Length: 449
Ligand SMILES: [Zn+2]
Image (cartoon, rainbow, N blue to C red; front, side, top):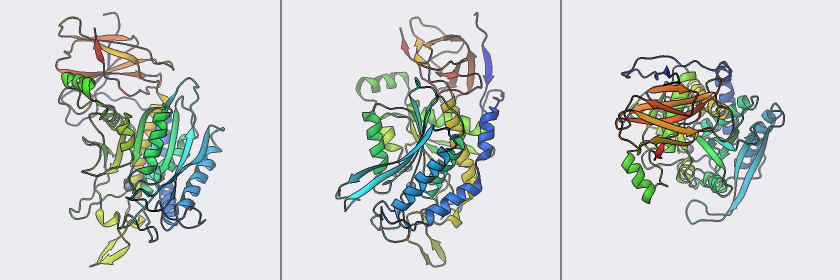
């Protein structure tokens, strides 16, 4: 074999059967992660709470109270950060008018997402990465638009993470584009996210990944009384619902029910998040969302995009969707005093390093195939270079069929690799990687004849 195979890394799994090596961190991303500030996050949330309610059908025009004022403030923060971006980051309110739908919208309503777009530096690179949270808040009755609905954690935490990532990432240059968005209408049935996902599909946006952050800043559960600020859940769908008919048969034949695009993204967030952020374990949950509940990543996952939900490990239902009140000594309501801003800092940093690593990386390799022309006990993979960018090389990933995360990474500068591991017993995927070690999302090989 003329190429040198370099066994680069074995993931830092405590339960791994393989020996371990450590992948080096990129000092530039390390420095960005250090900038994430618990104080900034708390300040954003205090400001969001100060608008009284951010219910989707609260006032769109009152300058002090309601979702309109909150949206204007988020856009103003984005514009402020945009001034440090050399004109690359612009902000907008993307609005539409909703008609009453007989369900959770009962009057004509202005629906508006607050967005910032940090344009990539390579005009030929059409990749888009999205980080999102939802701006709207609610109390016990989902139609109550007048009561105070602080929404500090649901979803002030997610919006604060989006704002903080915009602040830090807007100062750096990436070949790909990053979009920061605070959705409206989440509690009224994912309306703002559906609105953007429809536009993305119509305009054929190349969304490579979407990280949705919803409820991620409280460290203790009610009822079971668990306290933990070192674990972050990532919910992902294993099998894309797009896969029907022949595509589904193919997945079945190849046993790829655990390798859909959202699941690959979840593994990526775990690897990169744990690479750069100390004292956090990213926990893969093999579900699109919590049991029978939903979030703003769902309209994107349903349209075939790699979209996942990041959420705290233990939810506290005394402080979620509750009227502000005290009953039998228990304080109900979604207030900042029940949050852990050090935990939120780490969870925000997981988003930041994942986005930075993705947007800095070259695009995925093209036409990745596994050779099946002969029966062999080794595995031969081949692929083509990405559409744009200049990868230094490629990682071929390997894991046992029953293993949750990739176990080995082999580096090559070539566009093919033969490995002494049987495709019957392992899953494989290929990533592009640049000089600084930023890797693309993995691509699972198609059958090559
Ligand atoms: Zn929420």
